[in-house]
Image (tube, rainbow, N blue to C red; front, top):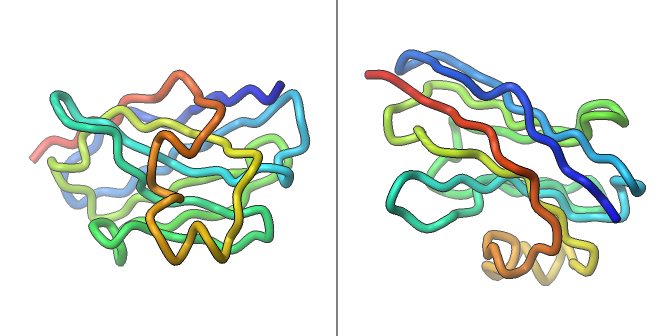
Length: 131
């Protein structure tokens, strides 16, 4: 069973940059669609950015232009690069993995950004942005 472990969260000032990484173990990471979600206090979990099995990426409109996602090395295959951080980006950031996913079908609809679409989750890492 795949296991996910986030790292790199912390505190930042508005306008600064921060990266968070997801470590994948227990299975081959290329067998999964990997996505970053976030959940702010009192709000629903929302999809931020992800990488499909074929390496294609997708980024939510509400962070496009500020956040990007990339593959790291085999130990940390999912990295979220956050720039121009805003106080509204304060949340717990989670890494999620889905075994049965399709780049074409998931990217044209909202399946990629729905928490229910994912089978495995990390524990989350806190990101706090001060204005």
